[in-house]
Length: 266
Image (tube, rainbow, N blue to C red):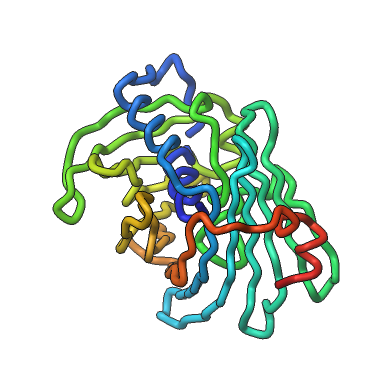
């Protein structure tokens, strides 16, 4: 679930341009609807290694445990940071609502302050825990907020793919996401977004690359992906995510997904 949400959010992260300038392409929209509807399991439990890489190649590792579960049409996800010591017991909870009229909820527990902080909409374009992913990247978005355009068909690592551009329909979406335009590559055989470019308001770009994925129980799951932030041709920062010990569709107690559990920890 977590991997898919990041991919879809990046695909939809998008520019302050209006619908009368960019007509919606029915074929591109139909593809994105299949991306959105792709089965990602009822529950997902996995370990995540987050590697933060600065422009000089210095690295910092974060070990994370994550859980996700469908609650009807909504999806809840929680992540616990296990190491290193400076982030241990930090936890992050997301309620991703299917209702497009309702803003998603996100909370972050900071153990040093012993306090659960709600992430306001105005902060969702901010970096998530020093990574190249933002809080916005951790949630899904309503397809009706965007106009899509099929740019061309191409290949990614030998697999046929569609190249699709996403343009937001309102300035509010741009303000929340931090993106001004996105271009995604969607594999034609499984409707997974395997690459994307997010054009940011600050003239930087974020490049997503899904390097490894596999099929388990009929569901495509991400094993490894990177997000790289660039300004011009210069790499400013990079984040590597590796997923392991993946357990799909196993029972997870509803009480795992509460702000109280954020404070309690694993």
